[in-house]
Amino acid sequence: MSKHSWWQTGVIYQTYPRSFQDTSGNGIGDLPGIASRLDYLADTLGIDAIWISPFYPSPMADFGYDVADYTGVDPLFGTMDDFEDLLNGVHARGMKLIIDWVPNHSSDEHRWFVESRSSRDNPKRDWYVWRDPKPDGSPPNNWLSAFGGPAWSFDEHTGQYYLCTFTKKQADLNWRNPEVQEAMFDDLSFWLDRGVDGIRVDVAHFVMKDPLLRDNPPVTGTPATLARNHGDYDRYEHLYDKGHPDNHPLYRDVRALLDSYRPERFSIGEIHIADWEEWAGYYGNLDELHLPFNFSLVHCPWTPDDIGRRVAAAEEAIPEGGWPSYVLGNHDDPRIATRFGEEHMPIAAMLLLTLRGVPTLYYGDELAIPQRFIPAEQQLDPHGRSLSGSGRDGCRTPMQWDNSFHAGFSPKGAASPWLPLTDDWPDRNVAKHLENPRSLLNLYRALLAYRKTSAVLQSGDYRRVDAPAGCLAYTRDGGALTIALNFTDTELDVGFSGNVAVTTYLDGDAAPARLRPHEGLIIEN
Ligand code: NOJ
Image 1 (cartoon, protein in one colour):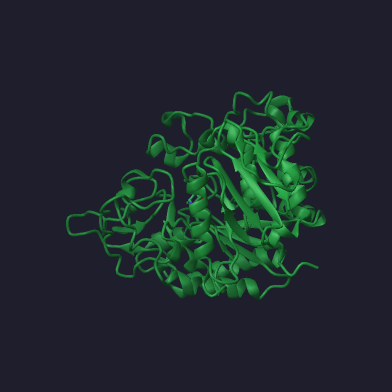
Image 2 (spheres, helix red, strand yellow):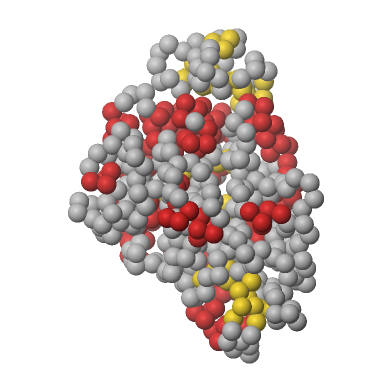
């Protein structure tokens, strides 16, 4: 038996529930839809764990990241029985289920906030961050919303502002009040008691704020950011509204809660921090988050040196015994096929699945679904509407399954999908890709299958090795495997020797000493 946990050796696949599979016919994906595709995930693809973005009751101001009840299922997505069926189906196939936990803010329609805003002396008033206006009536400090405008919303009824780091319908919880922690932990236990295997923690480093709510200073020089453009928000050093040191005791408590369960429960935190040391702080002494997401490759220039440097920096920063993680795409960033160019998708797949650590795949990237352009005025995404060019609808289009009605996303006769499909869906879908032995989907399958049986890829060390310009090469497990990736559109003499185990061309013509254009190789030494 492996000495490593499932979350160390496994591969995570993110489903955005609105966009994966609609079974009710309303044009919006649902939990029975995900359940109906478990064979695809377990057998066709071969992933180990599914992360589902929020499916809780929600007014959907931020498509579920505005939670109105942490212990329910939104009727749009199904029922609690549907959730149980999904969980059982996942477990029956030997996979794990990771749910999204959104601790920073609740919906303004959550009963806690409804009570909190009802009067200044309501017992839940202090569950959220309320402050008086400045004497001129303006917000209490200069903090901005990540989606544009001030991070404060004025409540006429009680004459105070509440803090809302995202939309006005997402009110920041006050985690300095112990009752909040207790209530949130109770609600989290609700899911852990039901057997979910792990949590993805939404904006994990935002949760604790400066108790004095000091103004953020303006950025001097080039802002260090790992995230996509956030407009004016990027003009401030977010010293006081995120990354507060008091997050660390909180995650130690979260970890203690998770660790009180058997079998083991897992956590992966959404942490966008450009400073490696600060980012790695979220491992704690391996007693905080199991993994902070490492987003450094999402916004990395797509060159061997930039990638190599970031991997080296991550390897260096991670504490002894800590485990790396990598991700290329998600529901917040433009699709990788459009960012890197489709010809780079095979090496992107090989990179993600051969680095040391846990890869997270984003639904549809196995087909190279492109970013769909949706103009700002048509964006449903609140960020897309507030800041032109930042819309996230384009990376959330429906999964493309086959050539049938709405690409198999919805049942026949259903309403139009909530977002349009990408134009090339008749050729770019799972059924078509499966027919083509050299498709990207078949490459993902080959890589996942290889990884599943390779202890070297699952846990061997990583070392970058010399290679000609245009090639990124590294070994795993002291040289047991060499991975060589050609980022150029010409052949490259790389001079490696050994047995080619996988070529991104999925043919029999690969040679370890010479890479074809955009070819990637796993070479057994
Ligand atoms: C990060 C999530 O990934 C994003 O989709 C959401 O809008 C914000 N957190 C707010 O919850």
